[in-house]
Length: 275
Image 1 (cartoon, rainbow, N blue to C red):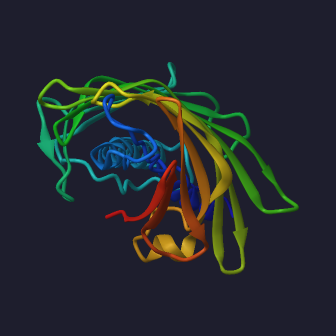
Image 2 (image 1 turned 180 degrees about the horizontal axis):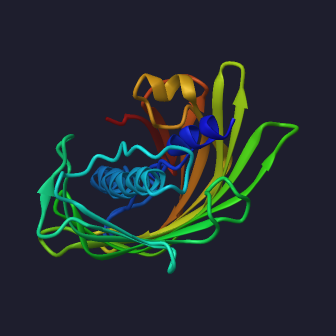
């Protein structure tokens, strides 16, 4: 059971894309459509954190903090991984830069500090920070804290708390986005696989300087069946965003494995397909 649990935690940590929209200052917010460039930006932001999540868990496994000792991490052969067990600290050093077997370009350092001796222990936490770290040319800053909040034997559910603080992504042109989030993720095991239920909030500022907040109003649902087909967008759930005083709702559907999102805002709605 422990091996299965830790194997299933990885998709549960995928950063769920928060769709952020904005209206121009001189436009009528009732008649204007959302700024879809900002939507694409937020998927890029979440993809960067998602890559870090997978890297973190794979390195923890190979460092003896999980149930496997072999590494599945997508890192370059010359990446230096230093594990200081006394300080409970792991440093992943990509040096001046390299490209992984799967084509991900990384440079700088990712630093993991942890409590406990095994991630499956309740209250165990992992804090990820960065030193000059870049992925595919985007610099990542801030901290991400992952906490095991317990396992419910009766429902076969693992509870994970995930928090991003002082998140900042900077692009090569020096434009940047600010991002923070607090989430609770419940991973439930069933006969047909797992299902993840996600609730929480986020806030930040886009590269265009637009402030926003986001709230999950109906839990976002991710099914193993969908993940197996490469669809990481939740198959159900709703998000409410407040941008410049305007509430925008993103409806991810009612259970179908697809990449469509219905966006509703004052004056209209639109269906989007996310690649």
